[in-house]
Length: 309
Ligand SMILES: C[S@@+](CC[C@H](N)C(=O)[O-])C[C@H]1O[C@@H](n2cnc3c(N)ncnc32)[C@H](O)[C@@H]1O
Image (cartoon, rainbow, N blue to C red; front, side, top):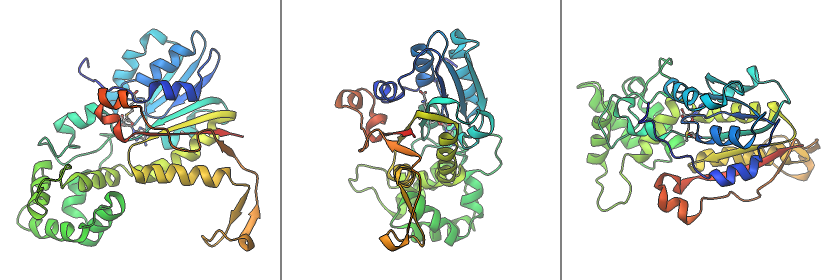
């Protein structure tokens, strides 16, 4: 447990957005190492309350231990933040935080299978109780399905070629490790001076698919809005453009005073509606240079903050 080290990103910005205070009620849908959670409980001492969850059972155990000094002021469950609305009372929260993606321990623990830089089983499950693993997708999905995953979740331009090569190679023997997949992609698309590893997008795509991260995010944003009080704030930290687009689209749609049908926003198709939230930060907030220098993993973080009306 002592080696579960995750540096929380954009701490000052998150606290500035949520403004935790005594008596306030907060929800953290991605507790992990409890960095943000501890700060929220600290700032809302002595009477603030935190409902927290994480899909990762290891993280939940760590968080419970780390938050022991705040005993009696929090409840942490293992689960998907998409389900926050099923156990946190509707309209009860002053602030909700979703700090998306994976934690450093998930990435750095080879046995979890998230990293192409270390050899491990092709796993990638955030919640070990889930049955679907990356190996199931790599060895079981059709070439079309794999190409769709690489394209939609990884924006991988060579999605079809990579998918066909995987399906071809697995006929000889099934893939079982991260290195086997990383090496195949490297053979097909040599690194040749590129800054990022050629398998980066494929790994991101597999991870998103295994954990249904985009589907969870969409449901999680709805859940967060449901449990917020009017005036309560939602802070979301994303780490890649796909996630950020979902958050931006959600915020835009819920902040509008009209809806439209047929996917086309033209005046004739508009129907009036009551906006459910307003943007607190019009543009995404990024970490400062000092934070990026201190914590390289923060470099792709973007924070968006909304307020329920
Ligand atoms: C970037 S870390 C969060 C770090 C945390 N804020 C801290 O201060 O230590 C992301 C965490 O979110 C969890 N996670 C990702 N998607 C989730 C979801 N849909 N529901 C619950 N937890 C999720 C991951 O398991 C991981 O532990």
